[in-house]
Image (cartoon, rainbow, N blue to C red; front, top):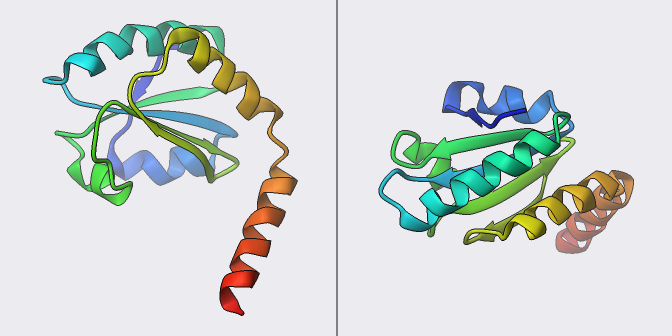
Amino acid sequence: MPSVEIREPEFANIIDNNSIVLLDFWAEWCGPCKAYGPVYERVSEEFPDVIFGKIDTEAEPQLAQSFNIRSIPTTIVFKEGIGVFMQPGALPEDALRDLVGKIKELDMDEVRAEIENRNASQDE
């Protein structure tokens, strides 16, 4: 499935209603973003069950700010509504493909338990 432009009004709905969502924060003027775009697009075609979203930091500055985006491109991944990966810089095609496979295998019960444990220890 080709990547989709994501805007702030539909952002939460997309995260909440899809199992895996990858986000590419980018801008038109960014050279590395232009190089990463075709790679991101090719990999998106291989995983029709995964949402590959693109967020233009110029058009959606509030979304970029909410994720504290300081350099672009930045890739962020959500699984079952939980942010599980964030990395600035363009990922090589094989690494991006590999990342999607690892995210699919990620045990979200373990992730939720780890979050609960971390929150509990911070409350102490």
